[in-house]
Image (cartoon, rainbow, N blue to C red):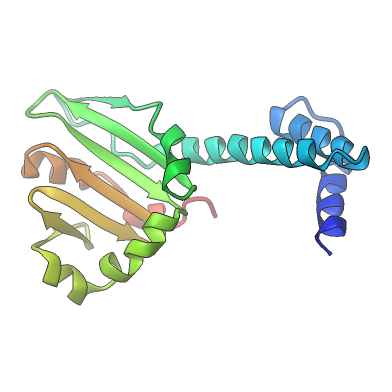
Length: 186
């Protein structure tokens, strides 16, 4: 029963007209391979299209990172997203903040198996309180474990800050709109 569904989805892409973007080209190649009976190549192309779409989604997640405060700079770790496949898929962005004090990183992961497994811990106020002190940032609770902050937003976006002074990390996190983060990818 999946075959008609895949064929219909890919046919829909073709029916919307020729496009010069890589995702459409890859899906068209998958459909052509499927129609030729080359199922493995079709699967490879679908996997590649999925990778491209996840990269696009990760670029969207990057927009939720806080801007560096005065005296600070931010550098995006372009390789962070490539490692997400080893952690159960989804999307990930990471930025290093440096300048006004010890440097630190803010990492965001979404729609990932590891994040979903942490939902039972970080999505429950009593469980979080049992694991360590809680830091409140704009009505969002962050678990503080030895200076590493972790929070789950909307039960699907994990935000972590680590490596710096607590006041510096909190000041940057305060710049984030967590309600907006809840709507990521929707």
